[in-house]
Structures are given as structure tokens and as C-alpha cells.
Length: 377
Ligand SMILES: Nc1ncnc2c1ncn2[C@@H]1O[C@H](COP(=O)(O)OP(=O)(O)O)[C@@H](O)[C@H]1O
Ligand code: SF4
Ligand SMILES: [Mg+2]
Image 1: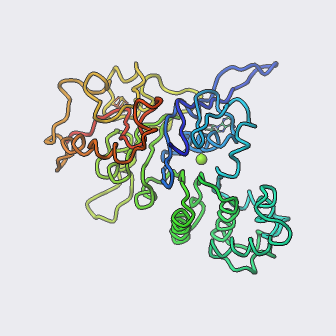
Image 2: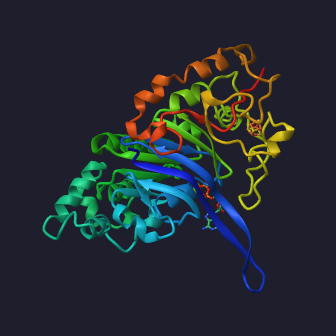
């Protein structure tokens, strides 16, 4: 059973206009996302700013109500139309934001900030609150003396530790980390990621790690979900994704990563991120895609398992453009891509509940891609 599963999730915001504030359009921030998170897994969600990552994180936790789709928490389906449906799962599913300062009440001491949620959820009382807060602070690498101070007395990294302590104090099973290191210096970023991975191992947590920085997730996530224009472009095990990016957008993100290698200059993707209130037709990436063809603007490419893709299922592939290993710069890229997605990967990492006959949605261990069209030389 997946800890979290979403199927065809959409979160659209109405755009109102005119004297009577009628709905004149929709901002399609999340537009048909299907994915799952397993127990103890770190799933990174990456993509440029504005592609819908935060809205997806908020929608999963019911902080923003999705418009349509299905959502399962711990195997139970949630009624996504009612905010109260998430109530029984509040402590199990937590979120940490980019700016811990704005989410920490400046007039409350750290003791109040950390003990209050635990008290509300019945995880501590007056008699043991200080002891529990001391343990929490220790867990995130802060001294017990921190509890009597106010948020302004701490640095950005320390505040993020306090935000993490507040989330783990409720003994969650999954934490959505939304750009939690984006506002921090590089050295502090590394410390916070290390802390999250330590807590993940010690407390058997799952993490959904949202970031615009693909390079950050290489050594810390189990799988990566690449989003663009509110949709999923590719989901793969991290090592597979970095070794062989299949989707043209993943490849473009990869090429934009700065490198210390003197011969490898980052190649920035041209064009603009599409406005979610006016998404391009067909493949949402087509205005910027170096491989785009005419029919790419006609049809939305569905997310499919990589080995089920052939020239018929991908709008961008035809008989003249199908890949051979010789097409790919200096490697066995295309050949290895298919052979590298062995049945063993899927079947080994799947529980019986995730097998295809058990209830729809793509299998969590599969490599899924909306378009398989690696670059030619
Ligand atoms: N509450 C909201 N109302 C209207 N539009 C929103 C709302 N929240 C987010 N958006 C829009 O949805 C799009 C995706 O935003 P967001 O999920 O924050 O992207 P990301 O986290 O990837 O940068 C953006 O265009 C943003 O302006
Ligand atoms: S379908 Fe594939 S080739 Fe066509 S625009 Fe989209 S990503 Fe590019
Ligand atoms: Mg965001």
C-alpha cells in the first residue's frame, strides 16, 4: 500500500473579472497529476518556478482544495471536496515551508511553538512538555536553552530546524518539504538536507522534497518527479533519471545544471515557463521543446511506462526518428534506456497492492514518461 497516492489530480483557480466578478478563466496550477509515495521513500518534485509544485504539495495536504481527481492517504480515499476529510490525517502528514520565519509566530517562544501542536494532538501535557521539547530540540541539533527564546533570535538555518522540529514533533509518516533550503546559504542547505535524511532514517519518514533545483536532489532522493505546466513529464528512480533523462524537458533541466568541468557549459533552456492561465495546447512543453513537431501541439501525451512506449504512443516519435544507441552522444543511451528498466525494478519494489490488477494508476516502481525522445547528435 502506498502511503500517498494521487490520481489525475487537478487544482484550478478561478480567474474572476467584470463588475459581478464572474469566472472568466482558470489558472490550471496542477493539471492531471498522478503519482504515489511509498513508506520510507524520498520523492523529489522538481520543475521551474510556477510549474505547480507548491500547489501540488498544498493540495495533497488539503491546504488547498483540489478541483478534481482522487487522493488516497494510507490507502484510504479522501473526499477532496471537503477540507474536513484531511482531519484524521493531520498529524501523519506534515509540511515545512521555504520561509520558516513567516510560519513561526514571532510573539511565541520556541517552547510554545513546539509544545502547542503536540498538546493539541495529545502527544504531551503540562507535566512532560518541557521534556518533550528538549528531546525535539536535541533531535534537530539545537540546545535546550533555545526553548525560552523567540524566533527572531535564530539564524535562517536554525529557524528551519525549528520548523522541522515542529513537524516531526507530531510523529508524522510523511513530510512535504516545500523549497525548505531555497532561502539558505549553500553550506546551511547541506546541513538541513543531512538533518532531514537523518530524521527520515531514524523516524522512518517519507519525504516529498519540492525544489526548483534539480542538482540538489541527486544524492538525497529515491525517485524524481519532473513537473512542467502543472503536469508530470517524467517520474523515475533518481539514478536512472540522472544517467538517462528520457523526456526532453528533463534533459533540458539537466543541461542547465552548472558544472565544474571546463568543457561543459550549462545550456539554458530558452523561452518562458507557460502561464497556467493560458497553457499551450497539446504537449504543454511544445513551444520550448527542441524536438517539437507539428502534431505535438495537437495531443496531450499521456504518462506511460517507458517500456510501453513505441512510435504509436508518443506523438513525437515516428518511424524515421526512433532512437538507436548510435543517435545518442557518446553512449549506449537509447539501448540501455529500455533494457535498464527491468521487470525486476518494478516487481521488486512493489507490494501486491500496487500490482496493475489492484486498482488502477501507474505502478510506483515504474519509470513513467510523457514523451521519450532523447536528443540526437
Ligand atoms: N491561491 C492561488 N490563486 C490563484 N493562483 C494561484 C494560487 N496559488 C498558486 N497560483 C498560481 O499557480 C501557479 C503555480 O504556482 P505554484 O504552485 O506556487 O508553483 P511553484 O511552486 O512550482 O513555483 C502560479 O502561476 C501561481 O501564480
Ligand atoms: S511531445 Fe515530446 S517532442 Fe513533442 S513537444 Fe512534447 S516533449 Fe517535445
Ligand atoms: Mg513553490
